Length: 91
Image 1 (cartoon, rainbow, N blue to C red):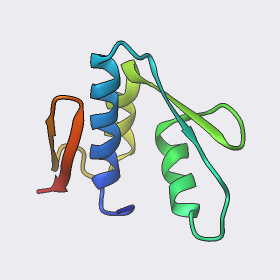
Image 2: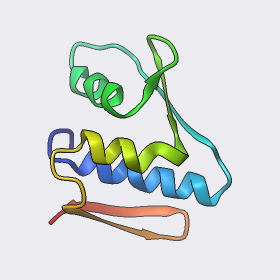
Image 3: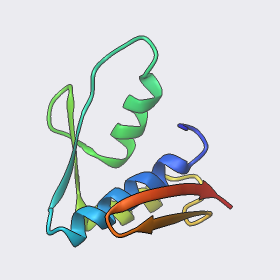
């Protein structure tokens, strides 16, 4: 998934769901492994580090950070139903 910009659609969808539920932040726990350096780079591009393993994204600035970090923001679509994220794809 990482590298195809779909990750930005997923974060955007999570932020929308969080906002609709009255949540202020998305919190991501990161576990180091030999294969997830792309995830760490992605988290650093759209979140604020709270520690070496915890990354926080304020819902109110999520879209602005996604637009700044994504290669081609808005070229993907997000389909959701209620609180369930169904799919994210690049157009």
